[in-house]
Length: 79
Image 1 (cartoon, one colour):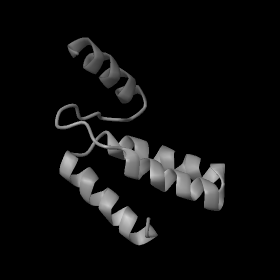
Image 2 (cartoon, rainbow, N blue to C red):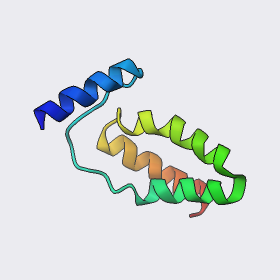
Image 3 (spheres, helix red, strand yellow):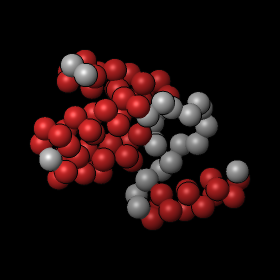
Image 4 (cartoon, rainbow, N blue to C red):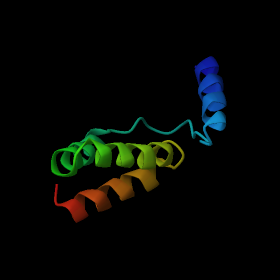
């Protein structure tokens, strides 16, 4: 696992992402629902924008921050 985190951290740094390893593995079902919703409603370009915007954030914040943000997204989108 140490090798993986070291490698992924190096990839992240080169892309401007400061990965946070640790905590529980999140359930990504809600995130995928948000992406699918916008892909169906607004098309693949919008879905790509969400992924490119959210991916770094999802991997650089704590479990509690991610969970709270996904609940807010679901509430706003009514999904």
